[in-house]
Image (cartoon, rainbow, N blue to C red; front, side, top):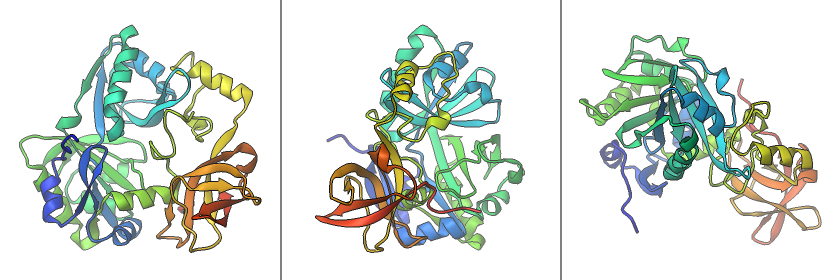
Length: 368
């Protein structure tokens, strides 16, 4: 078994008494004071996550645009410097390589943010595609710190640490500047459904611990809490955000996964286009749905069987749990297309007993 990697904030997590687990090959905090408390902090005040395990690639040069326009599903023409795009990469058969963010730093200069567990295969895939483009690809993952400050008070927490007017950074845009004495990229993205910022800065002259502690101190009056992967998962599930390895994978295509909105078939060409066009023309056998249980004691979990009223298998849960905010069981899963209409009644097999659930289009938590 290979030794787990550690982020630059590992010592902070240890000193804070965090419970650490293996996640994507990294020793990461799953919780500090408790998942429920951290979840509620993000929904009502603010929470700070160490997400430095994520992968970052710089893609630059005259061929950078052509490579990424071919490698990703979304349309790079919609980007301008200072904007971020959610997208995905697909294999030739339409299976999803990974979902990711593309930051347009400047003309012919992009930063990709990919899932930690997929970093190596993503880099390998990009390099394979790049054989016909010759862009410059640089993996800077091990040199990057990444903190996510999420919650309705996140702007108030961070504003005292920077001269950049954070209110001028709308969703899916970013600015470069100084925060907590460090030059960084400050982006208004996130995985929680709340207003928040992700802070990218290289390991440099200042200790990452110093940045963490400065933000925590600034957040004290606002109820800022350190938050782990457990709360990150319950928060994203309430919003119905897909998680690679659970809800999307090389065995799923973007149309059945509900990612048709980022799949720009009008583009001249991209990896997987022919297969995805064929899938669209043939029709979908299954679809990713959201579900809410009727019995509050019935909590859906990954790999639980989904059935019709007679107990016939129609699919499987891919993500699930109890919503801390709603107090009921929520989940996502694939079902045969005829059962995917919102409002449909389906059943979850929990230890041999069938519990009723309703198909519901995420997000489960309706944000104002």
